[in-house]
Image (cartoon, rainbow, N blue to C red; front, top):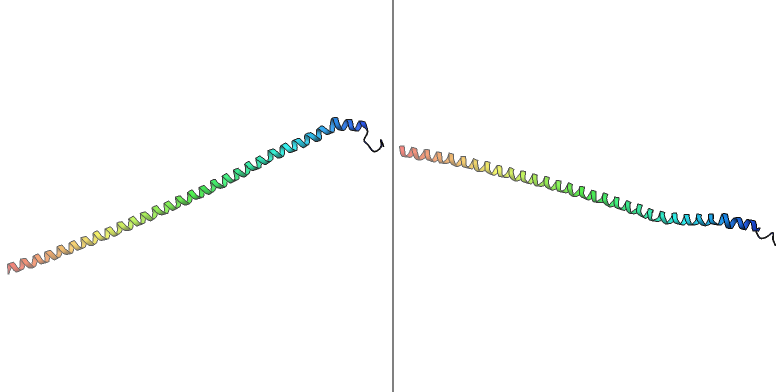
Length: 116
């Protein structure tokens, strides 16, 4: 029967030297696993924050671009409004000149009638 069971020397070495190492290794492995999980979660959170920040940045760029487009549209509309205003003024001035010419012609006709 003594051949089946380890010798007392082996048990003594296992208990004093090997068991603490095995136990310590298991504890270290478990501790590392516990550290790795939060670190992985932190990395995931960081990735999500970066993605969210990039999404926010893209949104900001889109809003800025839209605002720029809106400002451009407003400038074009204002320029078109100014152009229409200029055309109206020019047309009014043309009408005024035409009216003045008409008055002058009528005035000339009246003057001629008076002279005759």
